[in-house]
Length: 195
Image (cartoon, rainbow, N blue to C red; front, side, top):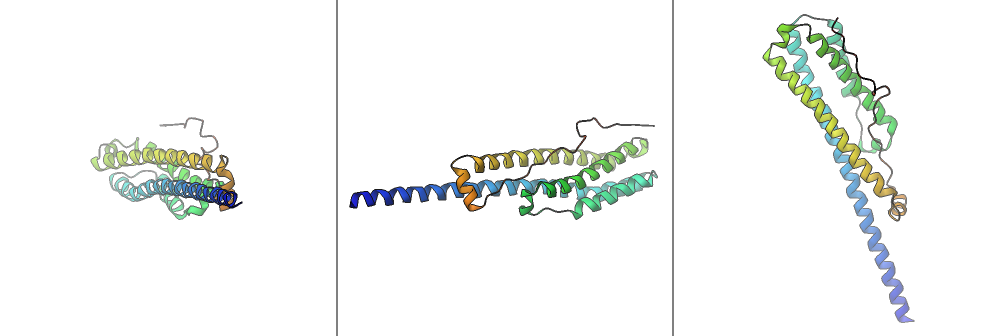
């Protein structure tokens, strides 16, 4: 009888230790998702910080469509006013709202760069060339960080859905994380018009 009790206690202890290990793995994975999200925000912030410099350079070097310039300023303002907290990563609607504001800014920047094509003296300006290269690099970094975020979120979501970890995840309150998704119509190539 005593040996049977020891075996039961040992099995329960092993299950508890296993559960703690799985839970700790979920905590680590969730922190990785939040860290990946912080890198996405970091790159968006880098872009937001570059825009005033780009706008000042453009204003100083050319007199062109005020509407385009104003749309960049307004889009930057909207994009920097929407923030996400770690808890918001479980809400696809909040990520979509954040992404929509960032996409508006990307669109405004694209129109700005197309407008600049009409002004050779601006394109020849070394400061503008440097800022344009920085902005292009930032857009590439944003795309890279979005992919890393999605990869990290996918791994986390997979981990919390696999059995028997899914039981522990549901008991301890680990929820799925939302992904960055392409905007509606993103599969269509953008129209570039130099009229």
